Amino acid sequence: MKSDLERLGVPIGRRSFLTAAAGLASLGVVTQAQAQQFPKLPPMPKSWIDAEQISLWPDGPPTNGFAAKPLPPGWPDIMVRNIERPVLRVFRPATSNGRALLVMPGGAYTFVSILNEGVDVARTMTARGYTVFVLTYRLPDEGWKGREDVPLQDAQRAIRMIRAQAGRYGYGADMVAAVGFSAGGHLGATLATDFAQPVYRPRDATDALDARPTAMGLIYPVISVTAPITHTESAMRLLGNAPTADLVARRSPASHVGADTPPVFLVHALDDSAVPAENSLIMMRAMQAAKRPVEVHLFEEGGHGFGLGPADKPCGRWSTLFAAWLDRHFAAKG
Image (cartoon, rainbow, N blue to C red; front, side, top):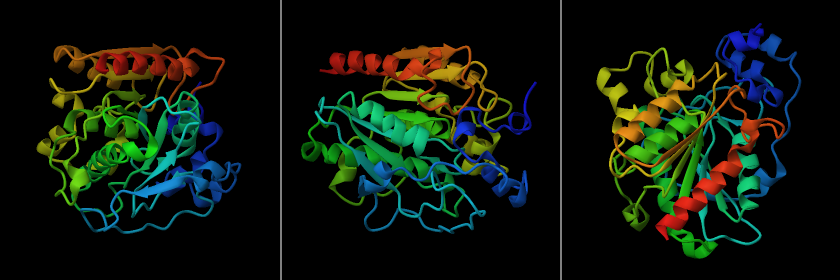
């Protein structure tokens, strides 16, 4: 039998460390008083606070209209909102393997989940030698004009800036992969298919660099933006309540897979009630139709938002599979 939170679509994996009720309160699903009854969350990790930051747009982002929204009392700071100035946080390995990884956490395009889909991933991948950059991208429903392009603007710029910093951090400019989770997986799929789409006016030499990732990991991603397969909240935050057919088509990444789409690695749990596994299968079929490299791992259980996953379940091994897959594709490129 499903719990009340499951019926409301709250990700199972995040429930252990996120104040799900706080998010629901902000959406009017529960009252703020009810939200106060839930246990407190872990504080912002010190490693996140101490991490070096790189501003994506030192002179301000390419679009305007940002309007900060009041947060409910007790809103957890590990669910980042009101992002006016997107940044990359840098996590460096003890010994570099010559590669970089861009991480795009999820959060239904309503917040950025920087702990389980950011800091935890950075810790695991820096241990493997990757220089990891975790992106806090702008959220499309925070007043920005051209909302459907705002996250992609940040993701394209992030890859370009990571390439521009290769000499400084000690990895190859052509050795830059990316991974996205949930709504961040939608952003990752959009970046993989629309890396060359002109969504902002170039402003410096960095913008002449290629925004195509070498390889892309998509972990329980939102791919479809239409019912019944989509995650309704993510689609609404990105496209609004009544998007046109053209807008839906513009942000349906599986429809944009082509000959230049980088290799894709997909992970999904079959019991994911928030973002159906069909999303990953849609992307898989599109990659196969375009004859592009794709690897898919479907797990019996895990729900949604499990991050690295529990060590005692098969879904908790995806990062090892991902690292091995990256090894193969980086080796093929070299």
